[in-house]
Length: 251
Image (cartoon, rainbow, N blue to C red; front, side, top):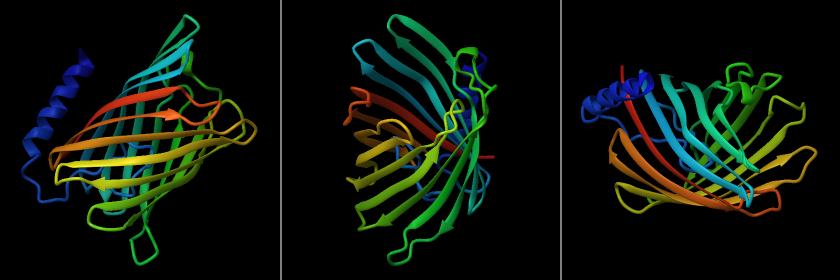
């Protein structure tokens, strides 16, 4: 009830501010896996909430209800970030629930788009091993980082891609990350994408995936999204689907 009340207060604050600002429409890092180079405006809180289901195989699946990325804009080139996830994992009739390790981090703008140089930002997070439910705690602090880049190809088409790496807090080996996505603007309110992305562990087999999705702009400060995809490699999940709601407001 406490968390629900907090959400209602933040939602109401967002509604109250949604028509008062003369800013570009909200830009989010969801629903695709390719993080956006966009920075949240100064003094704005932005909440990107998602609910997802992933079927790993015939004996296991996973729910995230919800995942919340909280952002706060410091200036035109820097935002602070906090990621929280409540997970339900089912594996061979064993059910594990709880909060995954909380991540704290930032995104900073590196380059503006100019010619062949893409709009570029850098994202870094640190996973806090003990700030999690008992079943999800890890042994070590775990960093992750990405360079996120975007080219504007036309008024209705963009190309985005990420390169980075992450650690799991259990082993010292990194997992390398790549993403590439094409964004399509169907109207002033509806955008879509198709995407290829993957995770390449240092010692294990790679996990490649494909997904696609849509987002719908309710107004400049509120957005809905839907997405889904499937695995392309032996180690990938069978399929996954997600729904999301994102909003922002100024303090």
